[in-house]
Image (cartoon, rainbow, N blue to C red; front, side, top):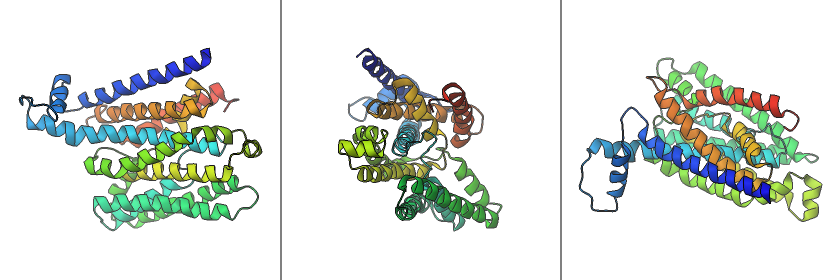
Length: 337
């Protein structure tokens, strides 16, 4: 009972931290916004308040920071949730959301769109479709493996991911070095710098649906961690649960990568940190991963905007932070990982 209360208290603490990060993100940036201005501008949408702020303030809040902050929170929560789900169903703590080739497929789709000079919307849709297509190809290959389908999926994911990564490298080789190659390279580094409301409208429903499915299935993921035979004895249709969770996690990853580029380490490190805080029970770990991932991504995005005069691609920062932290986890919790 005491352990349960302690874990609930930690989840509540993560919720408070998330709320603080969310509102603080509106005040941070090269264009200063005061708390008073934020409250008045937001309240003016529903209350008849006399306008004392400039149009620039209103534009920054609703057209620049609101979609960026919301998308950062959703992507962080989504990638963390997908990583936790994959680690549970594959019973492997080293698995990340890119394990089935989603990120590599989306990267190829975006690179292909940039190579043919498509517009932003077409590039986003193409990246999403290729991300989904990569996983469908992996599932098709994995379904042909009769003995150990879980291992077959992971190996097929590695193969398909490598194939798409090679295709991206080929496009970079033949791309125009003045315009196309820098655009592809920057996209691959991951960034939220150009986020607008259209990105939020496209990605948010997909991310929310995927996260909702994983959240509702979290107790069944708990059962899957016991092993195939034990789960079947309890009465869980392991194959059906695995495919549903894979589909939801794929939807999350493809949607996130299509609008932000490649952002690594979030789906690998954050579930481990959540596990350290609330334990291995997925009923607690999934909510903790959602809150922790959202807060982490908002913090990293704020740092990427403010650290240097030129904005740092967010994928670089997540790698700088995630890799040493994961090394620390390996050294500290190596036996339990």
